[in-house]
Length: 238
Image 1 (spheres, rainbow, N blue to C red):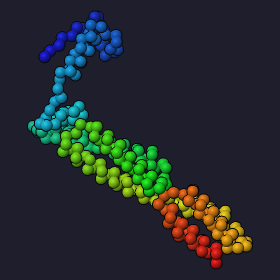
Image 2 (cartoon, helix red, strand yellow; image 1 turned 180 degrees about the horizontal axis):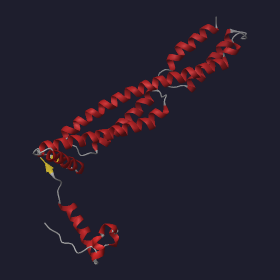
Image 3 (cartoon, rainbow, N blue to C red; image 1 turned 90 degrees about the horizontal axis):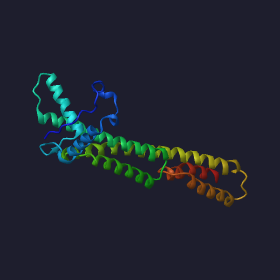
Image 4 (cartoon, one colour; image 1 turned 120 degrees about the vertical axis):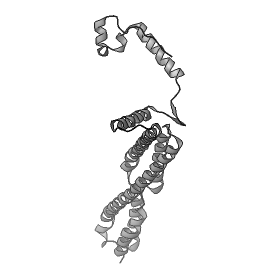
């Protein structure tokens, strides 16, 4: 199927420097014919298929690149092997794109807010994983490669999830120890020898525990309370 187009510009001098002129400056008849041709192509041309796989734009570029490599190496290009290599590269690119989105979400919505409680952290990590999988599913990948990409993505997400959980524990431990030490110095340490009764001392310890629970979060909250704070409380009543 062919399409004929009128000259884009009337003057010969302008035709020689056509790339210097904006599209809107070309003849209206030419632009109308181009627009009609573009609409015809999009409406009638079906996506190219290689076996059961649709040839995408990036995949086609990758396949042509493989052809050029083969020709430059004086090797006869193999269509299926070139296409398979191109699709594999494109699939890995898609997986990397989804992985980058996962890392960006973690950095923006999770890591910047550490420490978190276990439930809040789980919700943040799950939301990041859903977004990454959704991004990967938007790419038109052949089923075999899609499964491989999903497996690779889930493996990398699991590795980062474990790291974030470890970072959260460490951030929680630092925060809890810092709050515990400040509250102890503020409420207990200065007057430990001036309490008139054990009940008065325990009232301050109750206040300390209440403030500690309000100002701390994360998996180390109970750990610091049952070790560092309990040890200080034991010493204060002796």
